[in-house]
Length: 256
Image (cartoon, rainbow, N blue to C red):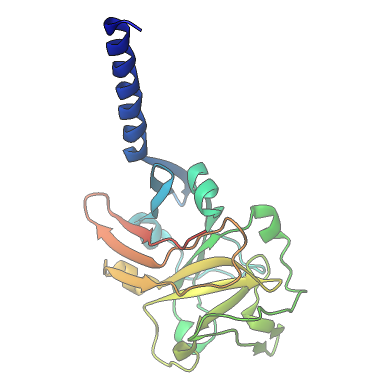
């Protein structure tokens, strides 16, 4: 190989190396949106070279203000919106979609008997969620410390094993909120069905959201996640006056 060929080969090699390093440092953002109540809710995902950095959701103030204060109860509860998560989030985190529910009358236990929003992040698809009828009463073998899966008896509707709701699943709640009498502001709920984890759920009171108050929630380590599913460990929610929306940002993803 002559000198000119050697220089060209080195240049090509160095050039390819530079490209490879750069590709590992590229940060990409992908977004999915869905319309509801004359506004739009979006989910988004940030990753760098295959490493998940942030999963997020933008919740417009128009949605929080625009819900009906009093609505007739529908059973099973129907979501205000279902927003798919970006394809890269589904691939790298094993999470599928976000479902938003408006709880105009709240629900037991007492702390949650106030108007609030449920933001379910499911790691199972829409078909599996729609098939949940709560006929499977098996609870997981272990849930995170500080959480409980209580049963609830309604005089008219019967027994809710593990606070199971059709087309949602069982709801594990922080133990300290089981007997809390004051209305809650925000809580992190964990969802199960068939003994397996199927969602995590920031549950936030409408009053707090209308105050445009920032808040943070932690997710405990959840055992038994399906292969390929990674939950975050932290939620930071900030109100953005420029966009008139809450920006929920999840970070600190567990190892696969």
